[in-house]
Length: 474
Ligand code: GLU
Image (cartoon, rainbow, N blue to C red; front, top):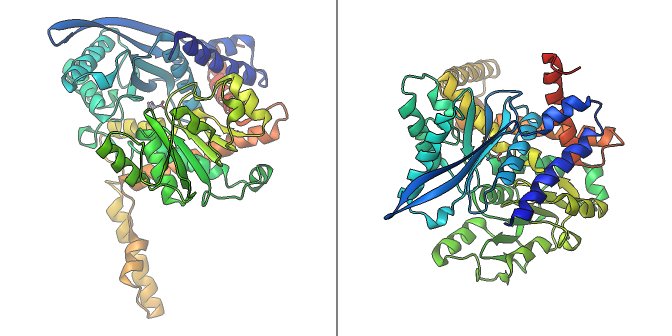
């Protein structure tokens, strides 16, 4: 990704903000305070790589501290630069506000290609980065809480936690300094699939609306919808898996080495495709599939729903007019540039914005942080009590009716909520509520022309209230 496209990404985010700010009635001062990135920490640190020493460039940006801690992932990618991390941190602020996660926005980035680093090197880089954050007070359960993003996962989060603990071994809430940790390291069940599951809950709401679907000449419901997913990393893979479970048809799948299309229209089995990719090292040449190269061409496939789930700026001025999807679900952050968005909206496409659609990750991160602060697994206190209460209720029903409830039905009715049940239900509720709030803003306000403007306006309103109540601005 070039420096120009990072500029485009940052400019797109600011253009989206300005467009939405214009439909709100907040003062210039408040809007300006919300718009700017509050703190940018750029660092260079040396790391031993083989017999050599490499100087690594890295960032942590805190866009807003209107609520604390700040929150956002850390990405490992060769294309990381300051503007990109600033744009991503900015999106985090609005994302948290839209789904009522009480955090300010932040993002981190380390400019490395993780595929070219050994596990040892990755560990050294991650630990040193964490130490740099500790040194400047840029990490902590009440300050700023990183999480996984592109190129990172539970393993990196475990290293961050371990390094933070080395500096703060007597801090009782120290485990809340990072989320997306392995479950064995105080993580939470359901965090890995959370973004993909959130994408599913979000799109399920979108396709439920009959009026909106009529306008696109589509039926309601996910069943039978032709779907193309770009990127089969953590977000894309779980989105594909859960879409498939709900009878959507995965007719196109794209990865960086190429893409495949299912000419039968029946849809791929995601597990089989993943197995093929693992065995052959590529998604290409999957039996029965048509290869698509270059991989970007997959975005132009004829489908109902297109899910870009990889990186920013993949739909731009050069290909927006070629996109055939009727719904675009932004599972990645910033996949559509502001110019491309204009073209797509003119064509009547429903664009489901990143700051809402991929908020499942940070939502479950919030649950993980709550778990870490409360030092107890969700469901631990109430599960057995709930099961016993339901069981007593069935006993009463049996004695009153003289009929017995079958074992299977009894088990279903008396099932008490476990951690994963609670995480999924909290996530589902969050995504449904957030969608209806932004949909209402879109439909009720004639000046709001699309879902993204609506999502930004909802977020701006929630943040502005805080500054107003603080009495900082009139
Ligand atoms: N990196 C994810 C995002 O962009 C998750 C952030 C988090 O869990 O804090 O939303």
